[in-house]
Length: 184
Image (cartoon, rainbow, N blue to C red; front, side, top):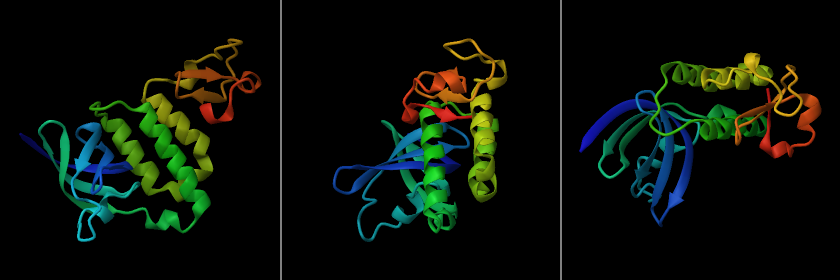
């Protein structure tokens, strides 16, 4: 049994049984992980409020047949985003994109620092949303500056498909369903 104590961003929370939940975290030391949180849905649970999506937390994990959250403490929460539903929805879409683009147990210090900065200052950065997506794609190794449209080979890249890891120009992106691509 190995114990970890690290900072993390809560990406998602999924029900698992009557009282338990699966929490998807992007941690500073381990990268993206999925951890079990036992009895988190009990009325008396002290972890539940800390494990809400978009919260930055200090988390203590135990690894034995997978990760389990033993303790969590909120550093910064998402309450200020929930006041404006449009802002909150856009941030959740960005987090969903980030979750799809990262792999389990692949820590990246530069990516961690970028995410920490982006989520903490989303109200400022949301005006530069395309630049944020470009930055994350670039850190992950898919630099749009060196890409070409998958269909016409044009260099004017405007869209990215996280499902297929391919780029499109604005003209060719019309052929793809909007829910499958991201404006960059």
